[in-house]
Image (cartoon, rainbow, N blue to C red; front, side, top):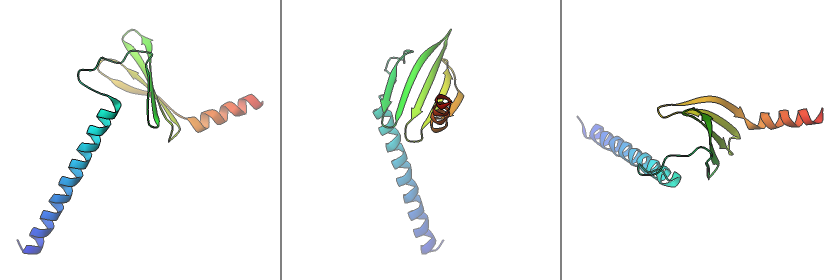
Length: 109
């Protein structure tokens, strides 16, 4: 292995390490920001929480099912999930620009 290749490999490995550490730091900050903790109490249906451009709402769907609705204000989207103890399934995605345009059009009729 020549000196140029060794230098390239070292620089490449250093960049990967920096990117990995940055990703881990961002993940940790996100976890701390949303307040997740393994010791925290579980979400109760009917809770609403907002952080930045995101709002999350939970609602009881009956039985052991809950509904989780998330609103992303930046992308103007609403995502509705069915949630149980062991799964989270996307049920419906809405583009809020289209939803509100349709509602305005229906009111004008």
